[in-house]
Length: 358
Ligand code: GLU
Image (cartoon, rainbow, N blue to C red):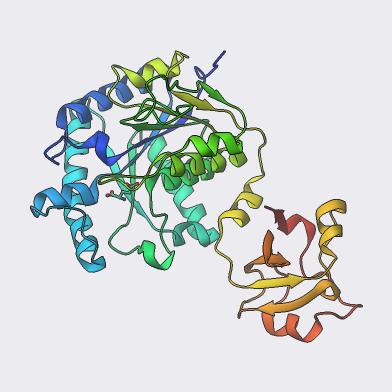
């Protein structure tokens, strides 16, 4: 039995294929319809809704009459910046019919790597909720480059990170597919939607396909998003955006799409450590057992090698036998750690409360 009726903070992610028509232009009827549904939820359920929208590159492709999403990075960035204005104009027009104001937030990976920027984002969103404005988020594609790993790459992951950071109750991924199928529905006529997932098993991962078309996401990135939500204690639903009145129906607990239930909630600070990019690495010795089993602090004596140039309080990967098993905030900079590694008698290199096992 689903119990989503009391969700108060909801993130709705909408993919490019859902937002655009077959000719690549914005599907204004669809945007109006979703805006109406959100207005209805805000009115009846008093919930705060954040939209994570794709479509900037897709709409830019249409505007420039390109045949496909450009591979050239500079052209893709330019395309995104052109499409983003069309995307926001379309959302603004759609919501204005409901007398709802919207705000645009373009995020980069760095927004979440710097704790202060992330707190600033959280404050801005809180203020937008107070003003009863719908925040509309996309990645700042013009300055983020997936090729150097400095971007989210797809809005499935971005929406899950946003949902996790703002401690949303629910993330809804609206796409053109109706949920997670037990086998590829394009190949198997008898494929069925898995209505409920409580843990992302190898079998579930095997059921996921690859991405195609203008959007970046596929089922794989949706499952990555589900994993992120799992750690944040956020429920996630994958559903078909084109199904009639989909959002209120999900909130009324209709068995639509696939619901992913979180199994555990990791405290805010630990989640931040998990998602922060590592500034370096500490390669540890057999003390790994103590870290994994008995929850001890990491002492300099247990560190074999220090990789990278990092400062005190940076986040680093903890590596054992070529495998990153944890992330942590370090108590010393790399130069100091290089001097005191493998030696006993020094204070903690990492305190337990600043360490997350992956
Ligand atoms: N940020 C991209 C855009 O707006 C979309 C990424 C995705 O497809 O997930 O075009």
